[in-house]
Image (cartoon, rainbow, N blue to C red; front, side, top):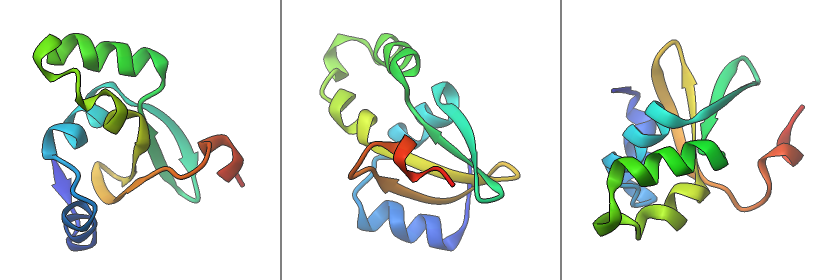
Amino acid sequence: MNTTKHADSRIEQRSIPSVVIDLILDFGATEHHRGCEKLWLDKKGLRQAKKYLGKPHQSYAQLLKDIYLIVDDGTVITAARRDRHHKRDRH
């Protein structure tokens, strides 16, 4: 996973585990957002991630729902927690 310095700072500030970033990159849904891609776990991706993690790590489920990534050319630009429904943010 390639990340920018900005993304590294945000991931650390927001206490997002690296396993969550990897799961979103592997199973996330995408949409174009201001010239980049926005990745998050939709219902299908969340099911796949839960299956991959197994029962001992189901506590990540709520965290997985709330995180999204902005990616450009395979590099994570930033990571954040959603505070509202992502479809309202479309431009």
